[in-house]
Amino acid sequence: MRAKLNLLSLSALALGALAGVVTGCQSYDFEPVEPLAIAQTTVEETITALSSKPNIMLLVDISGSMTLPVRPDEPTCMVRDSQGATVLCGYENGCPTTTCPTRWTELQGAVPQFLTNSGPYVRFALTTYPEASTGSGVAACTKPTVSSVRKGLPVVEDDASLLEHANSINTLIQAIPNKGTGQPVGGTPTSGSLTFVGSLDGLKDPDRKNFVILLTDGLPNCNEANEFSGAENPLQCKCTIANNGCGTAGVPFERRGCLDTNESVKAVQALKDSGVTTIVIGFGAETASGDGPAVLQAMAAAGGFARSCADDPDACGRNDTCIAATGLCSRTFYQAGNQEELADALERISKEVVNPEPCLIPLKGPQLPSNSKLIVVYVEDERLQPGDGTWSLTDNGVLFNGATCDRIKNSRPEDPIKIEIRAIRQR
Image (cartoon, rainbow, N blue to C red; front, side):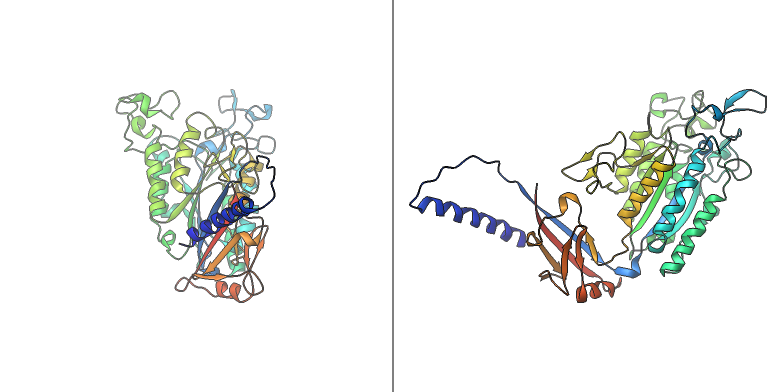
């Protein structure tokens, strides 16, 4: 009802101005002007403040392809295999990572700053997949079990303890070698891994925002119940195994080796339906070309996380565009090819999911009006005027202060604060 009154007021102003022109004694010359288009932004937040720092499960791909070089054209990435032949490094032929960094070592370089910056404000956990000790045979496709949860969600809530917990996750990631015992091996059982983390009780907390950050460098496979067979449906199978390893009936990878798009999307959707948002990061060549972009796009779209570019038109990265009307990127997943790009993606995710200032309701780009007179704020359905003790409009959004901010900070899951912001802006 309030929205209708706003529009009627605007109409009344326009009609009043026109009446003044019609009844006046003087004549005027008018030049045609471009009509101003306006739109209304409505932002609704239910805030439970400091007691509700978000849960984030890091679901990290440690399949064998993570040991491949990020710059395979570098001469130093060519090594001798056990037979003396010169081959591209990776898998059992470890890369000289000081001169030929791999996807895994680049990930290890990108993660620490993300965990340090976000650590005090987030309840992190870490699960890796696959749970494999070999890169060959059916065992390479082992899905996660409780043993794959390398660090569970914390039981503490204070900033210092959460930072210590996040740093311990970084220590675990750094301890996984690029070559040797415990190195990344195996396939990419993405659908099964997503289903597994969705079964964990910690991510079913209704009083928090719950996220899964899926960081993967490969196409999903390893589903023994895949709807397609490489022998019967080769076109739909889209075999991910070298030399068409899915193409013979009865072989272990007849179905396991097929691209597992549909079940992976369903697993993400099931997480969303249970209140868990999935953020997808593709890392490496496989996710940037071929079938990779379409698969990750479908998964990320189902995950429900919108990539914002409202405050930075270049935020979407290479081969992507920022949609000015929505302030969102065309591509729904993050794509990174090296440590710098991955660190940038993680930083942008941190800015979207972490809110160290509970009294700030962010408004970005097209959402942000130019003047506080163009904005209306309701707290628990009571309209508040801007000022000391209520709120002010900043470059970052609506910042509550004084007694109103105290109300927000004192809110709890059982007694949340409902806030509604309505802003008129140029479209």
